[in-house]
Image 1: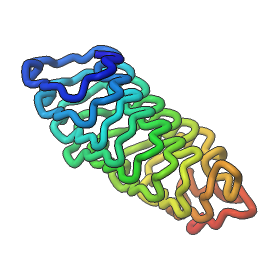
Image 2: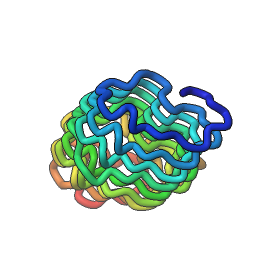
Image 3: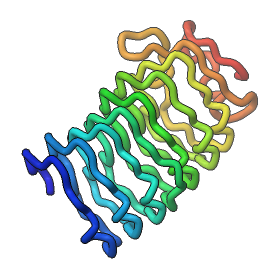
Length: 211
């Protein structure tokens, strides 16, 4: 359904038996204000650009509990203000550019990623309206790739739930305080963890609690 310019609504119930969704499923749908993903409850695999550049007000991924594979740019450039994902899915590897450049995003529920052990690059990067995020559901994550929450205006970020991270990638770019791109001024992190060692001394303007 990529680029169906005037699509305002879609009924996905005929797809209730589908287990695999290909690339660009509902991408670039400029008038799609909302979509009920409930019928996709049996989907295990989603390709690249799932809702890429679509004008949706809210996304509820809760019904998609069987997901094991998700492609890149999953929600990137979409216009939703809220991402709901209360029910954990089976996804263990979060792809690159998962929610990149979602300028209107104000709240994201990460509970759906409770089984994730690896988070791809630029996870929540360039989300200009996102001022807070709870990382608690990512407690099982061991690997963070580059640009984790790069250029998103969060003042205080609590990395403490990420005590299991042993491969933090290059997180220097997401902890440069008071730059023109990034307003992070305070980080909280579990003392003695790999993250604490990486963050220590990263910026003269950054206050790191626990390092």
